[in-house]
Length: 296
Ligand code: GDP
Image (cartoon, rainbow, N blue to C red):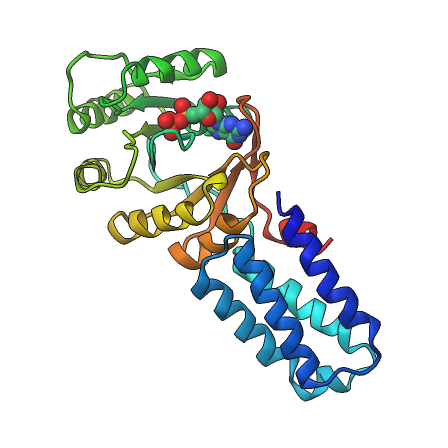
């Protein structure tokens, strides 16, 4: 991931650092190249444009161009801007409420929603010592509820018993009362996906969110889908009050645009990165580490 972006940017900055003095024109030329590199990595156009404008404005500041190592300074400005673009600080789940805290997981079918639900449940249980219950509200995809139950067995996390034919809002109600009665700290709701964003899906998300009043609504997006991931995120974020994003398949060779655009498009932090099919392949997302990796 990020390999070709990293190579491209490396080339631009090596040239900048290689020169002693820099003119405003040098900076502008370099930033045009940065813009192309970002677009080729599938970063959304408005995001790339704003990034380059912000960096250019800071970099043509008198002190930078007059400094002893102007190239170095420009790279530092780019690094800081990248960290900011990725979300500045590491963002945790906000679960400090009277239990059960509710985490709703949303996203398109195949994005890795069910796997991610189980991964997060595993982490909350193992790392934070929480008593977690999961419930699948996915009545669309055959065997989705059974899939979550199987994953629950693997990570040793309870799942809500399945009642065939029950609809999502009713399952959510039942899950809430079961979690309350049985003293669970966290209830995770794995919602139905669709192949594409459609209004029925959004209406269902909203109805479930109205009932469950979740502390966290996490959007799961497949980082391999690039520009499409950005559009999906925009659609969900317009209609559902997201609190964060989880990017899956970060172990793949995605060009990175989804990761780089997500924060700007949704206004919400990337909270986790999925890094494999295994249920322990989930990492907290560290913007500064990712920026460091991109800039080599
Ligand atoms: P859902 O339809 O959104 O619930 O998707 P699933 O959770 O069923 O995941 C679809 C496929 O993607 C499964 O084969 C998962 O093992 C796989 N998957 C999920 N997350 C990741 C990830 O971070 N990396 C990789 N390589 N595969 C993943």
